[in-house]
Amino acid sequence: MIAIVGLLLGVLVGIITRPVVPMVVEPYLPIAVVAALDAVFGGLRARLDGKFDDKVFVVSFLSNVVVAALIVFLGDQLGVGAQLSTGVVVVLGIRIFSNAAAIRRHIFRA
Image (cartoon, rainbow, N blue to C red):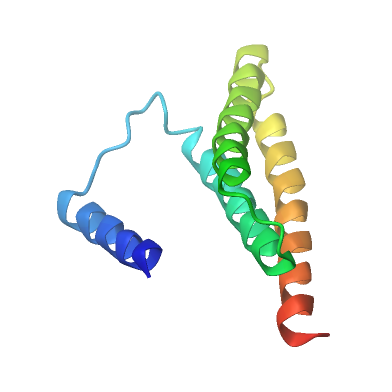
């Protein structure tokens, strides 16, 4: 319940304050969001499997975001940012759908 209240408060604060993302960070934000979603779906899957550890989740969440952003940054420096961004999104997307399928199988027993 605390997580839901925190999420709602965060969304409300974001709507009221309308934060501006600096141009320097703008290319990395979508990749960071996808990486964070991968960690969230992985955490939910681990919770349903009875293997959830909050320390592992926090480290996974932060490291996914940082590594994904660094890969895209490196791609920008090498001149292949768009290709590496696509690669990161594809890999994380596959992981997200894999975790979503496991969650679906666990919930619906199908």
